[in-house]
Amino acid sequence: MQANRNNDAGGQQSTPPWVKVFAAIAILIVLLFVLSLLFGGGNHGPGRHKPAGLGELTTSEPVRG
Amino acid sequence: MTMTPLVRKFALIAHIVSSIGWMGAAAVYLALAVAALTSKNVQTVRATYLAMELAAWYVIVPSSLASLLTGLIVSLGTVWGLFRHYWVIFKLFLNLFAITILLMYIQSIGSFARMAGKETLSSADLSLLRRPTHVVHTSGALLVLLIATTLSVYKPQGVTPYGIRKRREERAAQAT
Image 1 (cartoon, rainbow over the protein chains, first blue to last red):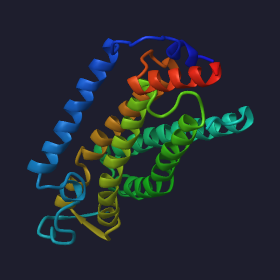
Image 2: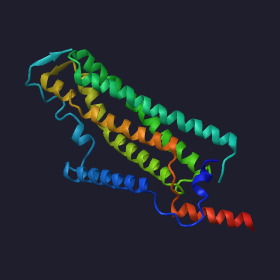
Image 3: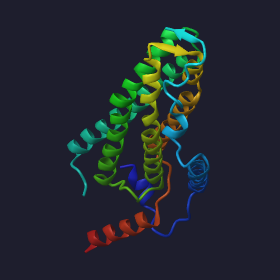
Image 4: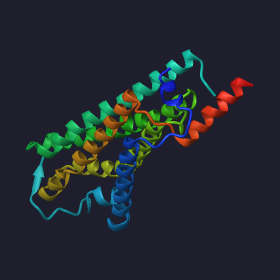
């Protein structure tokens, strides 16, 4: 089993470099996400992406499908 | 708890199908989002949002949740474990992160679809429907899924301290 390749190291292993890089990127992404929640009106999803004023934007010229 | 080879393969197939299904559905969703963003035909824009809503609720959300569930089953039921290897932990993080964003994003697609289904669209409505948010979110999701797939295939080395301890305990138990 390929798992043995990772498991067989008997002693304490130092954290592989790729883990440190991935962890740093993950922390950065989570931080950006939290900041976007805090400073983006506290709502990343519907509040930011939902079309504002459904049915209220009728002053512009209508476009028929 | 380790699964029998038959059950393990069944769970692995379910995990691969749901994960790659999620990725494929996201790719189709991206094509629709690009069409909505770039098409000059109003009917095409309307149609893409209706299709995107259906795809999101009936394919993308179920396949993402199935991917998470089967991933947990596969990891916990095999020697890989859930917290023994760094690549498994990163995959779990990516999956949870993508599902969190998806569940937040999904609430808005219904509003866009309802707007697209209105009998008369104003030019302001149309400009809202042509916002790039759907393309941005779906591209991000595809990138995350691609990284998760790459981790699954390469399985980069790296055992967590918990994994090392568990391995020692297992070896000690086998020796006695």
